[in-house]
Image (cartoon, rainbow, N blue to C red):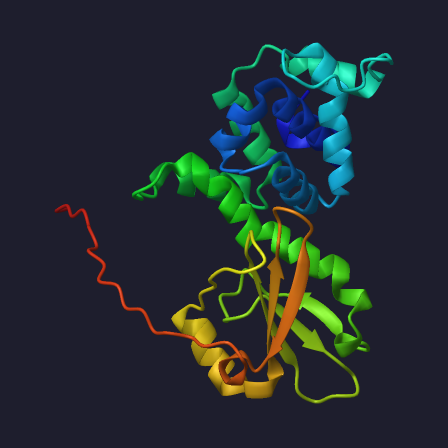
Length: 253
């Protein structure tokens, strides 16, 4: 089974196997606080219902030593059996890397960042947060976009890789000016969000054309709030300045 050619279904099954085999240790290793949070975040990142990840975990539960019975009254499905035979003996560190590669939008770059970024906390715990604040929140917005009345008649363009200060450009044939939308994600119903200097500057310039879409409560049931012209909304932003020591390496040719 080539990891670079895994289908969404196979990725979902691997996630279920990982959560079943490594149980709470596996959750903590990835930075999740609960299974519900993991189901929500992984499901959104893959574009599948959170119940699918839940069901795959339950399917593997009878095959691994944990406190859950799972689907012990029925035979494991062939699609799950193939994944089980392939990955049943893989250790947690290796399988977590396989899972991360299957979930990250830019796996090579994201995995490299994990290896090279020096931070004060355990890098393994950053995985869940990176998904919550990035892919999972963006996937949630993409799924909800067609149902949001405020954006009816608008088309959507993903601009996350352009570094322009917002994640999505919304355009309408009836309107000359586009709308800019930035997506943020938080784990609880309440928490802190941050705008980069560029995001803040663009929000200030665009005013009522800048939208902040906050996805919250990943730990239970994701929901969202929309802020129009966030700098002039109920939100109160405080400027934080950090001094950064930059290390360079030089050579003479």
